Length: 333
Image 1 (tube, rainbow, N blue to C red):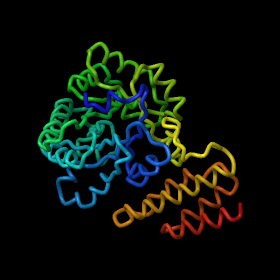
Image 2: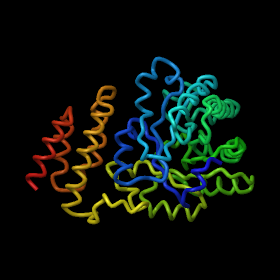
Image 3: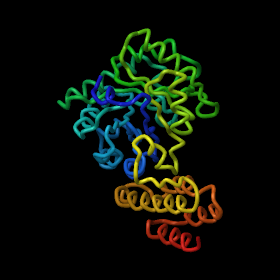
Image 4: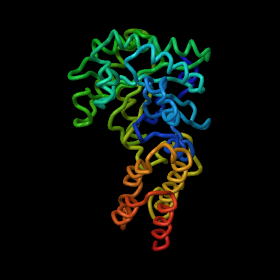
């Protein structure tokens, strides 16, 4: 067990990896306004990292020191490429490498990676070993190895899949409490997270179990942890437009006390502006500005004039344009 896992509170809270969402700018806002206990990058193709694609993909692995502990998530079905990519990622100073074995994206599954790993246990074992070998190659010590997965592919595979993963000497296992087939179309079934905890305890291994799926906020997460006995809670969709979500964990003084009302709305819009500026600075040359617009939909809702403001923001193409739209809106308040 790598040291940082044992220093975390119970339950600890994690920022979930989300493609084209949890980039360096998004994570930067959370590190400043509401830091989770553990942060994940968005998933990155290991195959791409060991090709010409590294020139662009390396931007997905940018991070700041105040995000620690920070975990890079990789996916691949090629052990040799995963080993090489894990070595490279370890040299970047990450606290851990997480292997995506649950993503339902068709382009990822077509490569035999992500959720497709649940259909090939032998290959899954080879990929986990490749990450360990890559870390060893890097000569970096203390880099954690973890896996994020689901309860099964078409059906519940807990009895076969989970003992296999827990036998691989991994530091943490995140369970999204749905099957691949279910996507996010049904409510997450947290009783299965409890099953995984029970299997872990019977096996006598030290792997931290992290539950994931439909967690609304910290209070809800603590209740789920209490019911299931899991060590940590990973939050995904609830973080959209809310970089203050994890703030109570560390009593972050940068968050306003008035979580409702006019003052908080203006604060939120200013943070959205700051997020936009950081996105343009860090990623403007390699990523499409349109990626920011999914965040605008989340930041701008639930108040008078939100719809009209969103429409204007959807037409913007740069930080300067967003700044003008927001300043005009605040003036009228």
